[in-house]
Length: 195
Image (cartoon, rainbow, N blue to C red; front, side):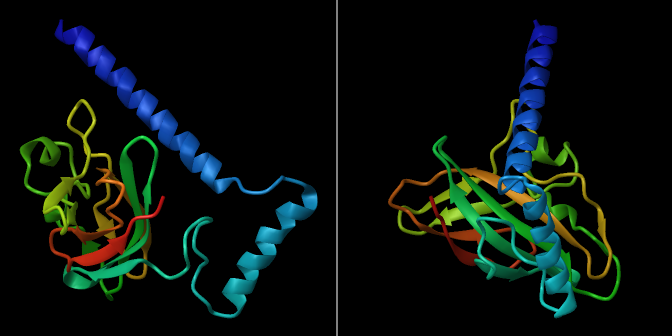
């Protein structure tokens, strides 16, 4: 019985991984794909490097972050989007950056203190969304094996290095468009949910 459950759970994780990979691939592929169109991204990328501006945001995301949260030892989390989807989830995307001058070991506290999440290694599983109007807190979703549906497996971030991160939560009611994002060791901040 437990072998069947483990096999079924493994299939679910593989399906989730494949779906996430396809979603990232589709999001990264914009435009038609002609030879002229392929040259355009190179021009815009070199233009942004040449004038010293910050890297452009991903397609569909605003250039201004929704929120910037400062953490311990020079860590900075910039939240770039909080998108509600039709499946009843909210996906929060952002960038975790080392704004300091030394290597930073990402604090284990970011994973929260739930045994089920902690045993799955470093993650952002301690993140929550708080709906102040209905006074509800939404925790990061987990798969059938208890792994958080968030960026995992990071440990040390070098000075100036930035990692793209995501966290997936159950969606608050449709009328809720502003929530407070919280992550252990970081300041909290209000963010807008779109979609």
